Length: 99
Image (cartoon, rainbow, N blue to C red; front, side, top):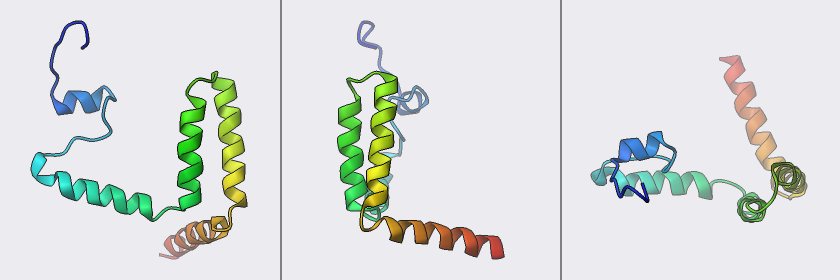
């Protein structure tokens, strides 16, 4: 795209992995709100650790990035709100298996 200056449509950008999702302009505000609700429902500590890990792993080898990710996941499990997240996950799994 850089050397050809060829424009691509949103569907192609999504297909190529350049964007996560394409929505019509009229639906953009709703899509943003929906995504924001998903993010703010998560553990603030897990989001903070995840963002820091994302930026820290960028310049590392794959093995070093995986090692860092493992460390961050272990740190997340030590957070105060981790138990609440695990309980919520198990409750959903158990309630859906009863149906």
